[in-house]
Image (cartoon, rainbow, N blue to C red; front, side, top):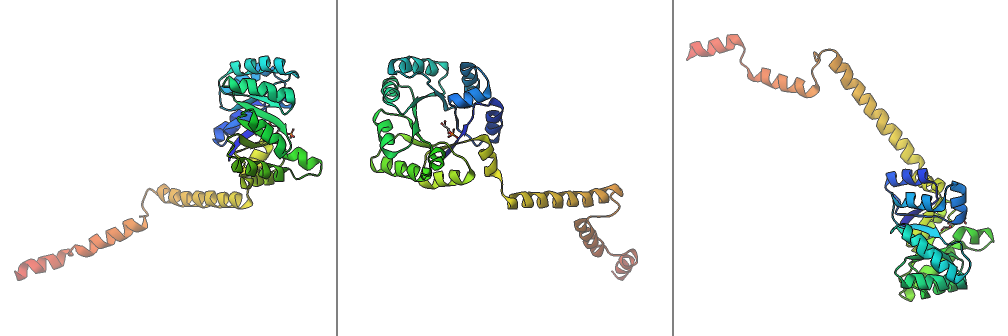
Length: 254
Ligand code: E4P
């Protein structure tokens, strides 16, 4: 399962790219508004550092959305155009997909809706797990069912688990067979965390520092104190050497 970042904040994306763990970014009008930058400028900037950047259409009518989708796609080759799972959104998505533009169908909440997204040749469908949980439904069950239906129907559209709220969602999405999960930056950071990793790393570094300090104090006495290996090598050489008197004796006997 690929990991995408669900944010429009450039600094967060830059940091996660540096960690080498993300393959894409999903933005939506809410996230763009939160980031507080011009939509085009921000999407183009993000596309400079990562591929697979979803940018969402905000038009409501099919024809307007087709025009808007073409414009979004023209910004950068990494752009994936997001359309909502509405009749107009899917109609526009079908036209755009026919032109070779990658489409992410967003706001999907059921298997039937996911089948509609597949029918227009969407590249990605985005079921919103967290928002289903919010209304007392099982979001990850829906993700798992979409994956299962797609596998049975040999549908190639990728399932992207969206509206992820916590690390458990990420594990569940992977176990459900989702192709991608898009995570808020805070959740991505949580994935690194484990008390045993933190304790183990602390211990390794302490041991390393102690060992270095011991070597350092030996070096500090001018190397007068030999290392254990040096000591044993010296002993062997000395044992092999005949002492002066013995050597003279041996010569006289010959
Ligand atoms: C991703 O494409 C969605 O826009 C996003 O995951 C929605 O998440 P939310 O339900 O937390 O707003």
